[in-house]
Image 1 (cartoon, rainbow, N blue to C red):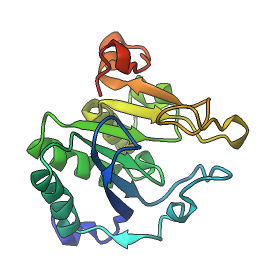
Image 2 (tube, helix red, strand yellow):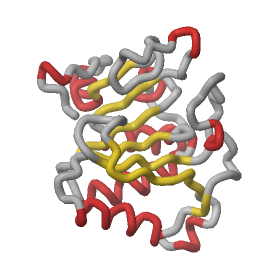
Image 3 (tube, one colour):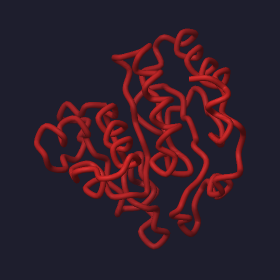
Image 4 (spheres, helix red, strand yellow):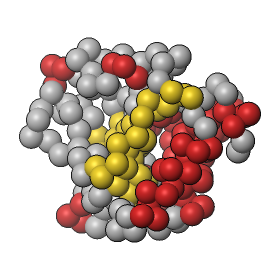
Length: 187
């Protein structure tokens, strides 16, 4: 991937040493652009596809370097915006990360429903790319944030309609399997 190819790719930021968006320590890569625009969203600055910063190879190199510097960091989380609304960037980040750190986990937050993109036969290039992204993930938190279902007692989600999905078990079973850390969740 070269900087020339990334002129149209934008991201909102990176948060290092995160413990709130997945099991263990990791970084959160925030994508730019979100079609859901949920009322009371915690990241409304990520909604515009034209906002944020230009994504370059050096940004990705800095993200990868974090995991060399902090080898006990166990996961990368993609949030946003909505990472699946920006599948080219999301795929490139995950693919590079997994090529260097194949055993570290990938968490992804999306406002889309898992069944709408995980099990359907893809018909467009974007749908094919999204299915490749899904295959590389360990956990996907799905569903739009709903202010009327907000529940601050829930771990890793903001509203009770959202689900934490064990992606690899779901793909193997060809049905949605909720993640359960107590029962050997794949996180």
